[in-house]
Image 1 (spheres, rainbow, N blue to C red):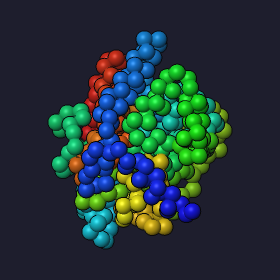
Image 2: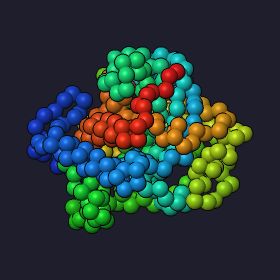
Image 3: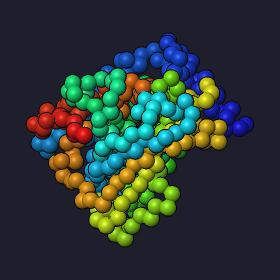
Image 4: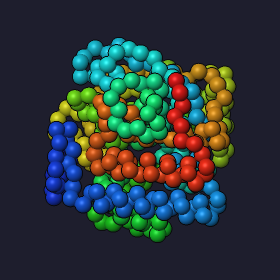
Length: 349
């Protein structure tokens, strides 16, 4: 049986029992709102407990950053109306920030396998917004990516079980359930095994879908053709140290690429299913230029917040996991900053 047939079978299973649908391919399952509230409460409890023990509130995931860097986000002239929507409607150049991180909620050795994060904040983006995350004058657009094309949790309801297992120290048992063994667990272990020398050398994906104006997309960033990334250091903080080493004397560059959803077999609701690049190739719509610099570390990097819902309505995140993120990211950011007595302010262009 072909992979495409399996995708369609899995999609039918995901949609069974659903109670609502939308033109963007979204299907809201019965009980999702309650599941999102439960996940949000569990993660907030984790942050609060950690603060009670250490006196410091930290991110529940992507805790260890390697540095925040200033960048220029250049929207390229792209032919074709399907891609010329939202932020990509016309050529322009924006100031931006990128936060590189490990995916784990713990600070661990960079030589260990883990997912790696690429959080991008584009500044000065005008247009109809999804939410006012920080203040009425915010004009930033956030894009969140990691170095794997798919996620290992299907939806909000499954996320409850996953988060409970994490808090009970039973994540491996949750992943080894017979219903997850051949799919979700394989994805999770693949992410966990990933290693890199320098965060500038990797490709990153959105995992989940978003709107692209009247269409739907996934997005990815990858080093520009011809990039030669320096990574001579091999220690427990090698990602930070190699990032700093390279940017001390050389620039870096990433292409921002978009993949259009071209048929109903490309699931919006299930982020464990990859959209075929043979069916719908990624196309470059923008370029991220990172000039030589000293990456920002410590408090200045740690206080930055990234939320996929912080941005334009034309790029509204889609799917159950995205709807989980909407509540979790905002709640945890507010809680973390409040406990630490930090202001929640967006960088200005």
